[in-house]
Length: 309
Image (cartoon, rainbow, N blue to C red; front, side):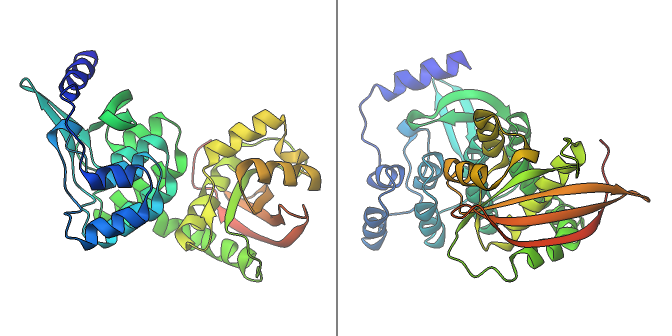
């Protein structure tokens, strides 16, 4: 890895200019990207001096989803591979999906999958920023998502891989169990909120439970699948909870407002899980407004406990 980094940086010393569309996408300049494409620029233009990355790679690594969407809708290849071949040393870096998976960008992973990204391409490496500097982990998008704790991204990738193989697991199965719960929770919501966070679930007495963590992840996956709201990655939620020194059982109206603002969320989902006979769980969900701190709606139901603690 160190050898690769040194060779790549040495090659970039040539001072070669990056393609204009590559720069515009990396800067999130949608207007410029639109103008370049309208003038006939190839959306998949790339340069060996910039690791053969395309504008889509840049839009993903710098977190510009609207630019990424526009590129995909105008011919960008979701499976374009960034790679280097310097002094006979070949290194596959990866597709835009690899970049998004390394960074835990849930919305971008979903966008790429919806536009035909291969959920299980050959292994690549995680990079950061321009020049594709190595950033620690190697493997397939699923492997790096799991290594880095991006659980929702990993679930999306597993579901896409299973679907490609003709298996009815992952998102399809999740929708059968959690779709009615999430649908009922949002059914009467008419507000202008656009971003939602699932904080996690405890037992009714406030004790933490591994079951609550699994249920929270599956509720999050279902919210992503329904595409009504932008969903906050659970890893970010756990970090903010830690910073605020909050326990899930202690989320009242005041802490709802604080937590929501730190996450950039308009809505929070909180709740409890209760173990029932026959490997079943009773799940109680509440939808809370960050602005007021008050509950908007509540729903309860049962799901199968089809996992091991």
